[in-house]
Image (cartoon, rainbow, N blue to C red; front, side, top):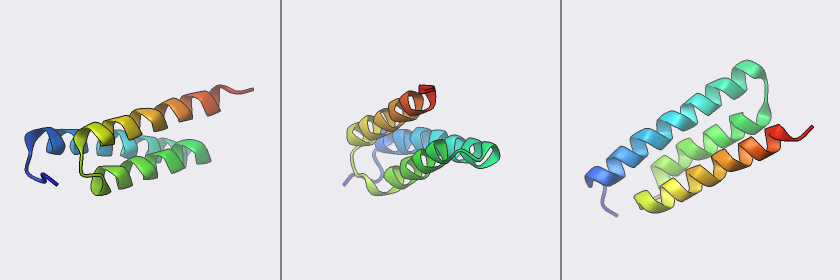
Length: 72
């Protein structure tokens, strides 16, 4: 695990911030899908040790939120 790698720190900052945005949006709109996805993104930014894997997980969560909220 490279905790002081610039790529890891940048990816953790970006995906943690996006996850926080999803969390706040889900809380304000009382939607569980973005709320849970935001929490999972925040947790992934702390626990995943690879910037590539963290990015893949976060993009998959964002895609899942889009697809679940798009349903009628």
